[in-house]
Image (cartoon, rainbow, N blue to C red; front, side, top):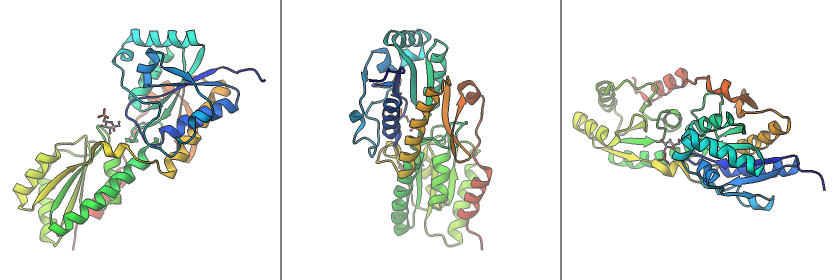
Length: 327
Ligand code: F6P
């Protein structure tokens, strides 16, 4: 039997995202194939602090790829947020001989990982969030599934909205990022899109556009509202009062986080999971895995955190043109 090259642990953290299971599966199988022992940590950093850690086999990750959610469970940990929590986590890794921790999660989870690396644990991050709001990478696992789920729901809303000649305000996820809203806005042909990066609270303008659209013959209208702008129910009331058009609000909420991952999420998650192990195998430390210019790549964690991401002005402009009636 060949000698074990070392111990890798993997956890999922923060909000779950469809495709996380595919990433864990890729880490486990690639890790084993390349001579590592791979450990699964249940319940994110919380589970690490409580030693909820098991050695994983090739078979343990069978029948997981096609399912949404995360079979390792996820959690947000207040204890790990403290410095003492990170020290404790690093000590547990040291005691168990775990040199590298692979963290699958979003920005908040990566901040935790970066801080943990200061205590001697090598960390590798795989971006898993439906929000697509991580600066160094053009892709995050779960976005494609979430946006398709929201798009299908909005198609349905549009049908009933059309039948009743109503206005629909539909709220999609994205606490501080408007990517899902922007993509749905374009994919669903929304008449208006409100995203935290761009919306300047000019409700008068919004209402006058809805009125004008109606005057020009639009029977129904869809306003896609990002969670970061929020207040969808009061917005619907305000629109109805100001325009006389019957208006309903729908908040899609957590259903956007569930569901079988799309092919794109499965493939990107699998490739990034495998690549994370390759990065470890090649001796690179404290790296985040991402996609740039159509390729998987890795970047130093500190460097990645210094980057910023802006929503595309052009896509936003296109969405505005396509959704505004003009004669
Ligand atoms: O970060 C992913 C996300 O789904 C956000 O879009 C949303 O604001 C948040 O998580 C909701 O978090 P929770 O599941 O804790 O309510």
